[in-house]
Image 1: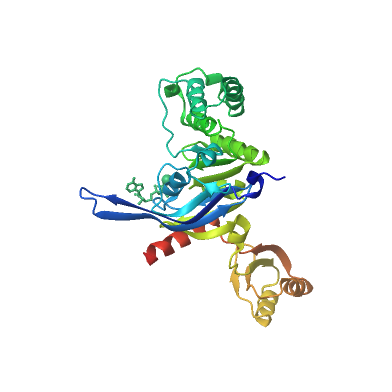
Image 2: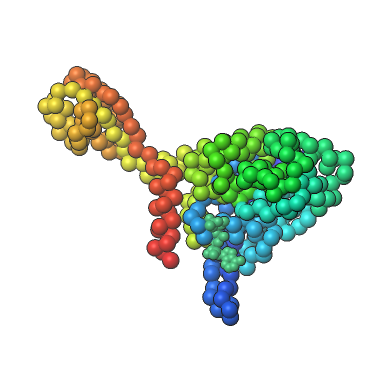
Length: 319
Ligand SMILES: Nc1ncnc2c1ncn2[C@@H]1O[C@H](COP(=O)(O)OP(=O)(O)OP(=O)(O)O)[C@@H](O)[C@H]1O
Ligand SMILES: [Mg+2]
């Protein structure tokens, strides 16, 4: 018989809403999350992207039960997120992990294991494994005030993994790390996926997201504005391709004119624009027949950054 955990989605978020009241008389209302929905598939790495103030942290806090939603629901492996059994299946690395300066990583992790009532012997072994896996074993008995940002992030992640969670949630795990630290953390995230874990994390660092995420959601002003695999987002509404050619100028211009294609002069020859509805094979054939050299064929692709910026600006305008 399959266990529930095998069947149920690791996380289903439905129409989540959260407003904050601020100001002295609590009269100012900030709609941080306003009807946000998405769900995760088992074993995927999912990236939550969005500009500052988009509602990412608020969403992750509601998922991990740190704050309560005003409306909507969160279910973790088929159970409401607020239940103890759900909490046990989740690990959370907060945005600005706050540690006890005078505790060592080993003490900090022992305390975290205590919170989950993990058997002492099991905890001891698991802490050793995590310290090694995350590359902080050498500093395990040093007070954490002596840690670098990267080491703190690793200690925070070790804490998030102490209960061997099936769903690992991280708020901006890559920010503040140098390129080496980021690469190492990316490897750690990929290793979690290899072990069948589901990973949800928020980020601003688009290149990292592009490299390791199976799917992403772009969040702006408290709503999901775009969701899908990186490939599907980048190929969305693709607008044709561009051909870089070299050869007899007149031949190029005549042929392009005949085929109704636009041309612009480039460093080496000409760039020929190919609209998305043209038959590329046929056009390539015609250029080659005319003895024109083809230097490059480039598909126009959106960048994750352009989609990010465009969706964020659109959400801003709508507001
Ligand atoms: N406790 C709070 N009280 C009042 N307003 C809040 C509170 N927490 C968040 N907000 C507001 O809610 C909105 C969403 O904030 P949130 O921290 O979720 O965004 P974010 O996407 O995580 O941004 P960042 O990328 O900067 O971390 C912001 O306008 C923020 O100022
Ligand atoms: Mg945040």
